[in-house]
Amino acid sequence: MTINWFPGHMVKAQREIQENLKLVDLVAMLVDARAPFSCRNPQLEKLISPKKNIIVLNKMDLAPAADTSRHLEIIRKEGHLAAAMDSSRGKGSREVLQLIAASFAPVLQDLKNRGRRARPARLMIVGVPNVGKSSFLNSLAGKKVAVTGARPGVTRGKQWVRIRDDIEFMDTPGLMWPKVESEAQGLKLALLDIVGDKAYQEYDVCLYLLRVLKDKAPNLLQEKLKLGSPERPEQELLADIARSKGHLIKGGEVDVEKTCNVLLQDFRKGKLGRLSLE
Ligand SMILES: Nc1nc2c(ncn2[C@@H]2O[C@H](COP(=O)(O)OP(=O)(O)OP(=O)(O)O)[C@@H](O)[C@H]2O)c(=O)[nH]1
Ligand SMILES: [Mg+2]
Image (cartoon, rainbow, N blue to C red):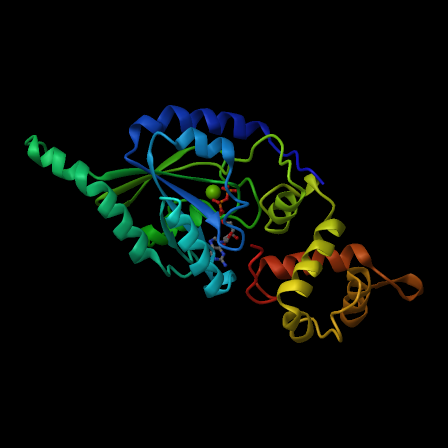
């Protein structure tokens, strides 16, 4: 399964990011804490490479804490500044603000040395769709400054917001790239609701989710989905879930489509518990 999902507004967004890069001091790149490496858009990283950046693992409330610590360590070893955040509750914001302040300090010092007045730090927030960029800005601002939504492609154009007296941010639309070559990466992006739902089959993504649960968290299959032994083919597990949830069609057959849809929604909302895909 390769993913081809690159709607027109993203071409424009890419151009806007490029044009506005010179206006900012720093770039914050948000990724989903459940699959931080698969969320890294190679085209986008190349685009922002002239600027210093901070990588934020958002939605940390949906990933096991030990996995997030491991991911942060790897990303920091690569030489990036990195922090984790839960933008729905504002957890982790202090560390993010400290990273911003530390990165901006040399600019402030330089202004001072030249007898100039201090000015707010200017940042741009970038990332693939639906990772919580606009929510992150609302969380840092402590009020609603950007529109958010539980589907990819909510922000359609750039928007400047002042989140505090000393920090301004440019919100940008989530950016994909024309073709996700790796099957594993495509499945993760689909499972995390980062690409539009016309770009994949929910059935394939659902079987992938069951495979990950079997491998990494069989206890969740038993506790949250009330399944017996997880050591069975994913199709069988899916049929059991359908029966236990009463997703049946005429004649008592299982409603595979509905079961997949509900299971994916439940996972995305965190109802199946914390799970990291990497
Ligand atoms: N659990 C949890 N949900 C979050 C978090 N941050 C954002 N969300 C949810 O994720 C969904 C997407 O949030 P947005 O802020 O609209 O994401 P975005 O990256 O701006 O999306 P685009 O503008 O489409 O690229 C919304 O349903 C948010 O409520 C978080 O830290 N934890
Ligand atoms: Mg947005």
